[in-house]
Length: 131
Picture 1: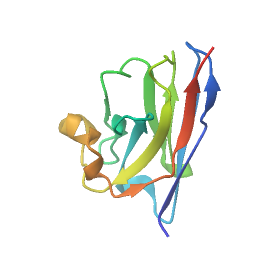
Picture 2: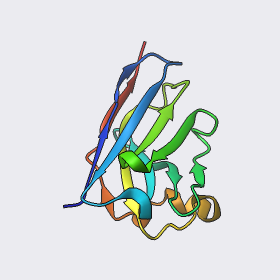
Picture 3: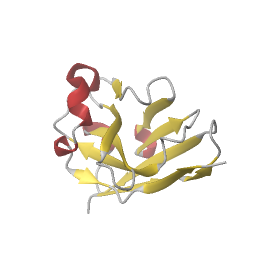
């Protein structure tokens, strides 16, 4: 059974940091691109970042560029999202998703921020930013 499980969410003050994890079971991440998305109440789900498996390239939404870093540890079958300098606009439920159709995050760019390109989704983890 294919499963993605996010963890690492929580409450942090503005300017603080969190590291989210996306652990896969039932398949290996070696062959899939992994994307992070977020959805705040009353808003549409938006892409945050993507990392591809074939070339290890990454893509970031402008809203998080320079603050968030995506990485993967294939030995642990896990992808991480390091979030620094969290802002009041960052709170949301964060989801990870897997795609075997995204070949290069760098080459495909903004396409990797489209939810329809992903086939498997986790249940999400809540991130709250508040003083």
